[in-house]
Amino acid sequence: MTLLHDQPKTARELEWLETIPAHWKIDRLKWSISGIFNGVWGDEPNSLEDIVCIRVADFDRTRFKVAEDSLTLRAVAAKDRMNRILLKGDLLIEKSGGGENQPVGCVVHFDHDYSAVCSNFIGRMPVATDMYPRFWSYVHAFLYAERMNVLAIKQTTGIQNLDADSYFNLKVPFPPFVEQRAIAEYLDRETAKIDALVAAKERLLETLAEKRKALITNAVTRGLDAKALFRDSNIPWLGKIPAHWDIWKTGHFSQVGNGSTPSRENSEYWSNGTIPWLNSAVVNRDEVTDAEQFVTDIAFRECHLPMVSTGSVLVGITGQGKTRGLSVVLSCEATINQHIAFITPDKERADSWYLRWLLFSAYNYLRAISDDTGGTKGALTCEELAGLRVPLPPLSEQRAIVTYIATETAKLDALKTAAERTIALLKERRAALISTAVTGKINCLSAIAEGN
Image 1 (cartoon, rainbow, N blue to C red):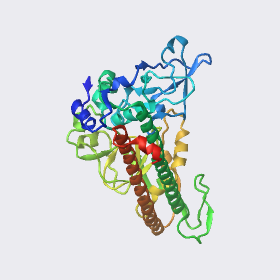
Image 2: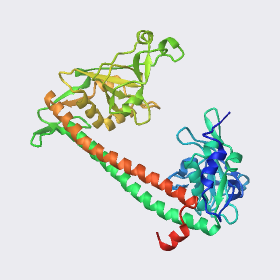
Image 3: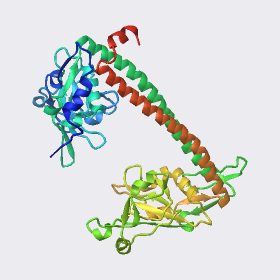
Image 4: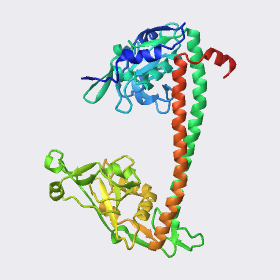
């Protein structure tokens, strides 16, 4: 069992306790609640004992509340509901779960009137007398952002467990009740303004993504000549194409194949390897220029690995996630695993980037045909990729299309980067606002009174 530590607890506590208002108390976090009651998962719904069961997946980690997008019903017997029925104003703490990028210990506010319990990975925490629940949800959010929860995490066999005794022994500031309420109301109002700005930027990102996709699809399927004559392609996902474009099966102008994964138990296949080896994660990029893993010459010979040449297009061919059907241009020689197919086009007939953008446009079709294979795990086959019928303009036109896409998507990508930077700054501002409010650096009583 490992106890995760960033730095000594006392040092981290003192950093922010030294500057709180003089009339605020300092005490153990445990005095803000009246107890922690373990949740229950119950049984499959039976229409007789069904009740909403809040899961960790229902935690809104931005607003620190319980989301209601997809609530779960479970059958929980009356005897198992004792001390577990959630009351409006309860806090819920994630006791088990988490991960490297999202450690266990998140706390949210239950602000609903319907009957519910929480799952066995969650603890119900009624707040103590004269404590304002919403204020304490912000205190826990501050502690989480500062990673104070990490000090109390114990990890065994891949799952994180929060040591509640350790966590609730943290010293925190206790403002008077009237200030707790003022701080919560101030933060609800001000964070809502920031959240609205973030939502607007996120809608912009969605619009930019849609515009980017439409731009690429239009260019690779209809060309750049607005005066061109069109004919029906007789390809299900394509529609009409310029009349002078040809239709080819991918396998008629390309080599198509896939790779394998040498046994990890054989050190001769991996130790001091020099041959780049790629897995399906690379298809989430636009271009592959290097590798993170390498196999040996022995593995290359004995495991029948292909050496995929520069200028090939790699396609994810397995899995239920989004990688199946995604493609990427390979700009270095490498070998690949069995979850990727390579398409190496004849350079005299097809431009690699044109082919990649064409496959990008065919993504939904590739997903559909691979879902029709009948297995529990969707998969594309090399045969399906080789038999895929695609439009091929003259090579010079393909290259003009690729140049156009590069130029126009660069403009959209710059707007995307700017929007993402703004979102990051807004989120930093939001976190800083919570920090300054719960540590008394903002007079929220005055701010509420003045409407600022």
